[in-house]
Length: 286
Ligand code: NDP
Image 1 (cartoon, rainbow, N blue to C red):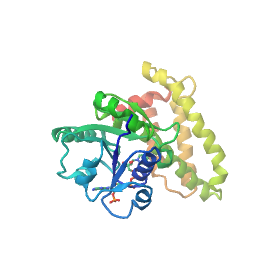
Image 2 (image 1 turned 90 degrees about the vertical axis):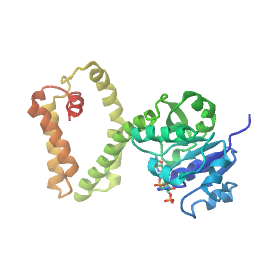
Image 3 (image 1 turned 60 degrees about the vertical axis):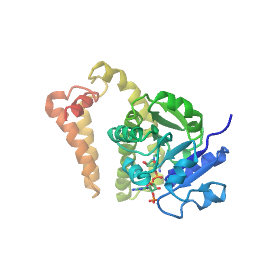
Image 4 (image 1 turned 180 degrees about the vertical axis):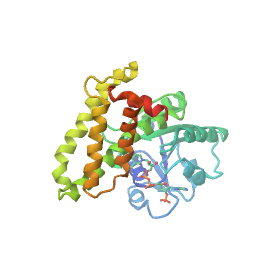
């Protein structure tokens, strides 16, 4: 089978990793970036540097966009002819912008898929990596093999917003956890500990989260607010201890104060004897 030719639009760390993965897999690769100077290593490995965006989009079977957001696509593509082209936008953004972008591309005669990349650039082309994809199923099926070069594609349905919805759900969990890591390290440093001192316990905590997610899922989906293992009144007290440990250490408490406020609100609303699944309802009502 002939391998698809690929154009990569956007050569940040992610776009460069994608172009490199396609070169590794033997695809003909064309690259374009708004500013010059980011494609030297790729061109040295055989990628074609398009003279302009029109040439870039015309050059390949598939154009993969890896940009800061969806709006950057409009500014990158401008009024480039898109009739009959296939665009796969793997840039992060909100689901509604992904849907609007799909309509925009469709009105110009292009087939359009949305995607959310679940790994950092180092994970591109690696076993175990995944990308959410959504959009017309026939377009996905036709180009699946080419997209699987980047990471195993996980098709989330015809709605072009869905790949971004699933992606942003993962990002909610990722960013809160990652910020939690840095918050803990700020408290650690204020108390004379290093990141290396904390790392073994961070690993344990991160690994344990899978168990918490698995344990609470049936209760949440059944509308059961739990409370047998851990009462929200206890959780609120624990979160206050976290907040005051940070405050006593003299570090920023903004994030932890917001956290404590949520748990306090749950108790004030009369949910102190319920478990943490009640928080989904509380947050939904905001
Ligand atoms: P960068 O911010 O490093 O690169 C963004 C790219 O977008 C650059 O090529 C930049 O061009 C281009 N760009 C920004 N604004 C415009 C514009 N107005 N017109 C044209 N081009 C524009 O991002 P990454 O490469 O790190 O990530 C790309 C996408 O992948 C993002 O949506 C990100 O959320 C997602 N992602 C990234 C991960 C990561 O770990 N890096 C992990 C998972 C997803 P220029 O060079 O000219 O500035």
